[in-house]
Length: 236
Image (cartoon, rainbow, N blue to C red; front, side, top):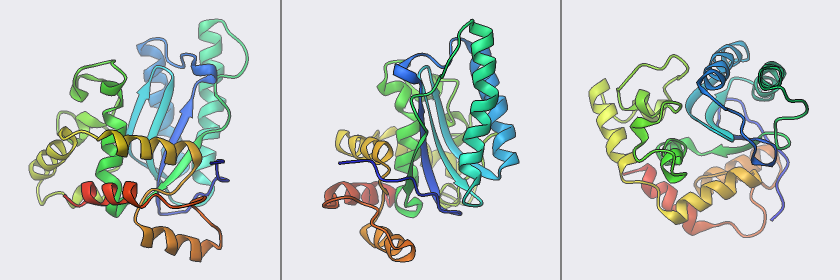
């Protein structure tokens, strides 16, 4: 299926993917990761984008975020490119583009899918073979969500708050849900949604957005089984 034109909806949660050009490294050492992190904190605050989950991988970045307005998400990513790419090129003696085209987004039905999507992001280093456990990967939001450290980049999502009445209860419930892993079918559904700009969520949620914005958001037949899996995981 062809990728849909990008839609950004203020107040809705989005999964954002930015890859290195031809899968080249966009982070070569700890200084690169730290520079990106510092810039992202500034850009998120400047353009009023709440970051709920993230992972910085050697060749790509994945975020879960909610923009306050229709332009903030694009402005944040453009600002990041203008500041990080010149830094990276100068430091590593290279020229030219760093990114594989524009960043990609998928709107997420957070009420149904927040924890599976955050888990998809934070378990990516394990799936990629970079670490054996998510808590040992330094450049993701997992440690924040399970209470191992405070991460000032993160704005806790309302669905994270709904996991318990105390910090300990929320951290324990989050750890338990993510520790179950992401099954292969759901992982592929999420990857396809992000890559092709599809909405991830309940059929009723997608239909509501389609009616509100007067455009089809899922090309072809909708994948009901995959969406049901997300709902089941999100409501455990």
